[in-house]
Image (cartoon, rainbow, N blue to C red; front, side, top):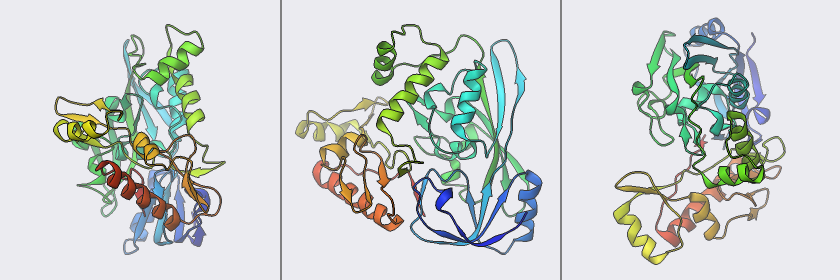
Amino acid sequence: MEIQSNFSLKNYNTFGIEASAKQFIAVHSIAELKTVLEENKNEKKFILGGGSNMLLTKDIDALVIHIDLKGKKIIEENDDFVWVESQAGETWHDFVLYTIDHNFGGLENMSLIPGNVGTTPVQNIGAYGTEIKDTFVSCEAMNIVTQEMKTFNNAECNFGYRESIFKHEVKDQFIITSVIFKLTKRNHKINTSYGDILAELAKNNISEPALKDVSNAVIAIRQSKLPDPKELGNSGSFFKNPILLKSDFEKIHQKFPEMKYYEVSETEVKVPAGWLIEQAGFKGKRFGDAGVHKNQALVLVNYGNATGQEILAVSREVQKTVFETFGIHIEAEVNVI
C-alpha cells in the first residue's frame, strides 16, 4: 500500500478529464482504509469511488483515497426475500447482473447505470420508475475523523430525488464501505410502467417479462441513447429533472402546451430536463471538444481533450438558456469539483 504523488486521474473519472491528485492511494480492505485515515489525519482528503458522478475542473490538492473494496454475499434469506451485501468498490452494473443471474428482483430497472455500489446511496440513484431507496436496507460507513463504523438505515439516509443525508447533513464526514439490499426471490414486482421499456419488450414479442427481459430492455434503451464512457467521456445524466409546484407549472404550461411532464404528487410535477434542453436547441451541439450528446440532451460529453472548465461552461450556458426560454432552473446532478 503506497501513496503516489502527482497521480493522473484521467482513468479514474468517466468524463476522461486530465487532472492530477497531489497524492493518491487505493484501499482494498477496511483495515487499509483505517490505516490510511489514521496515518494521514492532518492531510486534506478526497474520497473517490467509480468517478462516474463528478466533473473535475481542477487538480485535486489533497490525498485522494480510491475505495476499491470488493465482495458480495447473501447475509439472510427466507422463502420470499434475500438480503444481499455488496462492498462499496463493486461496479454497480456487475452487481445488478449478479442479482439478476440469481433471480433476485428489485434492481433490474437500474441496469447499466455507471459507477460503484458505494456511491449509489449518496445520489439515491434511479431509473425507469425505481430508486435505490426502494430496496436499500442499510449501509456501513467509516467516520473519516474517528475511523469508527456506523450503520445508516433507510430512514436515517433521508432519501429524496437524487438526494440523501450524505449530500447534506453528513457530507464529507463518512466513507460508505458496504451496502445491504432487500430483494425479492419470487412474486417479483416487475415495473414496466415507462413507455420505452414497454416498446422495447413489444419489439421482442415479450408480453410476460422476466427480470432478465426488463434488464435487457433497459440496457438496449440506455445503449441507444447514452454513450459508453470508454468511447466518449461522459457522466450519464448531467442534470436533474426539475420538480415544480403544479401552480407554477400550470402558468408555464399555458405558454408551452407541448411541454411534457409527469405527476409526482398531488402538488408537484416533474418536467424532463432532456426535453427542455433539446427544445432550447442544444441537442447535438458541440463547443470545441465539449458538447451535448446527439441522442440524449441530458448528457454532456467530452469529445477528446475537453477540460472540466469547458464542460462546466457548456452546462452553465444550457442552464441559462433553459431558464431564459422556459423560466425553469435545471440543477446539475453531477458533482462539480
